[in-house]
Length: 346
Image 1: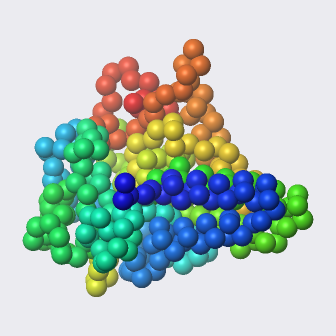
Image 2: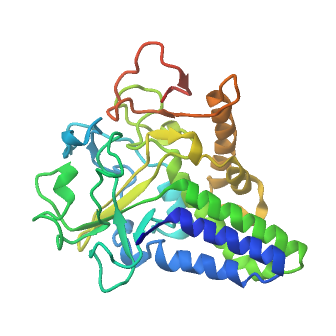
């Protein structure tokens, strides 16, 4: 109750696609995409300063830990060098600096009180490692203005810093974007069969754009080299696992000129969507506008199918995933650990 997710928005679009197929009325697909844009995709005023993001220095490293009691995690400004982000400039050239992805979690009626009145508010929960259960998470505002929590808002519960500043930050769940794109693909196909494809042209263009930005989920958290088993900074695409990780996150200062972005080192089979990868890689209506988008999605399509094959047991079940950062700290893998393109089975 009171909370919704990006997944819910994607299913809303899918329901409207099915409604259009059955009735010939495609206005619901247009409306559902607009609702998603209006409410759960941060607009330019909600992600100020992305133009100041430096892809050569994407973020400051902080270790992950196995138990919430080890947090806050210290931000390592000087002792750990991170890799470079190879897709940002490609995306910026095509669309500008703002990210076109959903934040994953929203308080729909300001039940937690971090917003104004009963207006929907971006919130977040999971921040403290793999053992933090839903019941242990600390709900907090995505736009941190030090109005709630302690003197530093909620920031010092999660990271240890020399000083804290007002900031915003968002996290996506890539299964939701993949599902939204997939729904628009079917809507477009069915509308064409009904002779009504032109009614969805603007939505298709936006779905293609979302697919391009979804490439941010193909990279290691701190853009470290895949399979290195240490903190070797990635250069170009050697930090790409080409899979749909748990998330990508981005943030920046409020009233100050800095921004950051991270990928994710951990990948689960359930977030993969090879059908959406096929759409973005091969379907002309959904072709990415960027220079490398189509090529990257072809690589992702192949890699996702391989990932399913690697994870499938002899009995047929598919379960688990892989990580490029053992224990969340880029440690050496245990002896004999099965690997996938240099990433350890989890």
